[in-house]
Structure formats: structure tokens, C-alpha cells
Image 1 (spheres, one colour):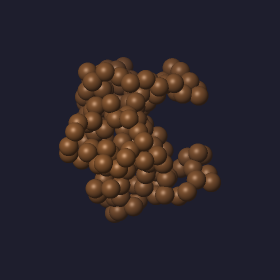
Image 2 (cartoon, one colour):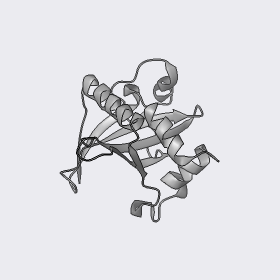
Image 3 (cartoon, helix red, strand yellow):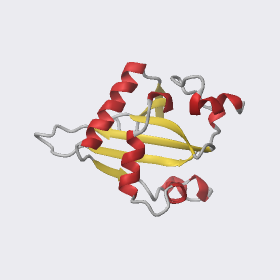
Length: 156
């Protein structure tokens, strides 16, 4: 079970700043490539397929770091609390357009651990795959008119 909410623009911007901070300071990046939820799912909607098809012959860690650092508040969809692990930090969902038409769903959790006590920060990428829901059916609370996000409204 999950519960979700929409954070304020300030909260989303702060989250993205913390994400960049963690990535710039050598955060451990964990990508869930093989997922139980993918069993029986169309291969196109798996992390492994999406990352391989979009970023052929690129170093996965460098790609993920670069792509996460490029997220903007306009890409934000919602914040999700994972009830299965209530002591873990919340996850954020984003949607990003690649190659002009490829809609990619991204779900991440950032753990900012005290550098003095615990050492490394961690970024956990649960989802980075082609979206199973058209972006025209998803609310992006902070998208702007025009630019790459305009395509969402035109497809309705």
C-alpha cells in the first residue's frame, strides 16, 4: 500500500537540491534492474529494457547520475509514502520526455545520511522505465506552458 501527496514547489525544489547535493558528494546509486513486479510485464516497461534502449553503450552509473541531476520541478508528479517500509524516506515520482516522444517514469528515494556518522548518502532508483500511463493522463503540478512539457497537453 502507498499513500501519496503533492508537495509545494519549495519542497520539490529542496528535494531536488538535496538530490544534487548527494550525487555531487559521491552518493551510492542503487538501481533496481531486476524487479519482481516485472515478472509477466511487457519487457518494454522494465528498467533493464528502458535503460538499455535509451542509453546504449553508456556507463549505467554515469547515465543515472546525469539524468537524476537533470530532473526539474516541472518533471515532478507526486510524493509517495511506502507503507511497507514506514521508517524509510518518501519516494518521489517524476516523468521525463526523451527523444521528443519517449515518456519515461522515474521513481526515486534519496537517503541523506549524516556524513560524519554514517558516511555515504544513498540514491535508490526504483523505477526508470517507459511509462505505462500516457503523460496526457498524468498531472504534473508544476509544469509550465510551452517547452518540452507542452506535448502533454497537445496529446489530450
